[in-house]
Image (cartoon, rainbow, N blue to C red):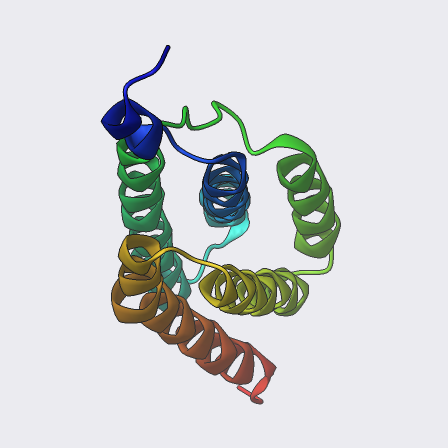
Length: 163
C-alpha cells in the first residue's frame, strides 16, 4: 500500500500529458530552428554579395543560438531533443534550393517565409507553455525570432531595390 505522501508526489496522468504536450511544442520549435540553421547554411553557399552574406551569417548565428537554448530546455524537462530537423528540414531545403535557382530575391523570399513560420510556431507554443518555457519563449526566443524576421524583410527590400 502506498503512503499518502507518496500518492501526492506521484504526477497525475493529466500533468504528465500536459508536460508531454509542452515538450512536443518545444520539440517542434527545435526542429524549426534546426531547419533554419540548415537552410541558412545552404543559402550562404549561393550568395555572392558580401553584405548579404554577412547578414545571412548573422541570421544563422541567431538560429544556432536558439537551437542551443531549446535543446537545453527540452533536456531540463526530461526530454531528448531530436537529432534532425525531420520533414520540415527536407521541405525547407527543397524550397531553398528552388529559390536559389531564382537568385538572391527568390532565396531571401523563401527565407522570409521560414521566418514567418517561426513567429507563428513560437506564438502557438507560448499559448500552452509551462511557466519556465513561457518565460524562455516570451523573453528570448520570440523577440529574437521577430528580430531575425525584420532583418530578413529588410534584406528582401534591399535585394528588390533597383541598383
